[in-house]
View 1 (cartoon, rainbow, N blue to C red):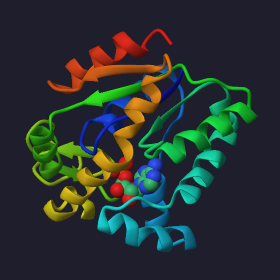
View 2 (cartoon, rainbow, N blue to C red; view 1 turned 90 degrees about the horizontal axis):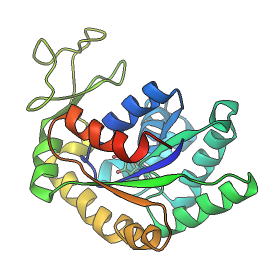
View 3 (tube, rainbow, N blue to C red; view 1 turned 120 degrees about the vertical axis):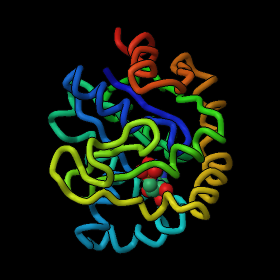
Length: 215
Ligand code: AMP
């Protein structure tokens, strides 16, 4: 299984990608998670990326491509991988194509998560994350057992800095401007599949399995 999950912020790529990765035993590489980890550890990369992320803007293509190159070189990625939140620009998609060609590897599919914009805004407003273990909840659709507390590790949940309303607006604009053109780009290949990513997490996962489960 060699998959790209494409979609706007809040479309559920991360949640669904985690399930798919666990069920099929392939690594999932989420550039947002890798970058947030670098920010937390205050590495030079993290310090540089933070200002873009806090503003809701994209981190430069060369930086993100470097991270993905490293991830795809890992031995675990040889049998398959799921890319979540990458590529996000046509330049990144071209860079990915070159990386895969170098390794003589082909993608099986690019799955687009289609969600109406009002639903995205509602979901992002309800998203809470665990700063310790990275678990993701939603106060409306997937709340923790005890309000504000992580089910896995008992830590206090937080709102992601970039899920605040003004930043969400910027992220959606950036998505329309830079990432949406990838639908046309991948639409010219035979790779693009679409999932109407609305409904419960289980319902969306069933739809995802029906397009990606046989790859
Ligand atoms: P995400 O967790 O995917 O919503 O990503 C959070 C933030 O990380 C984004 O708003 C960007 O600032 C940055 N980021 C993640 N992936 C990429 C990417 N492929 N290209 C550029 N910036 C990215």
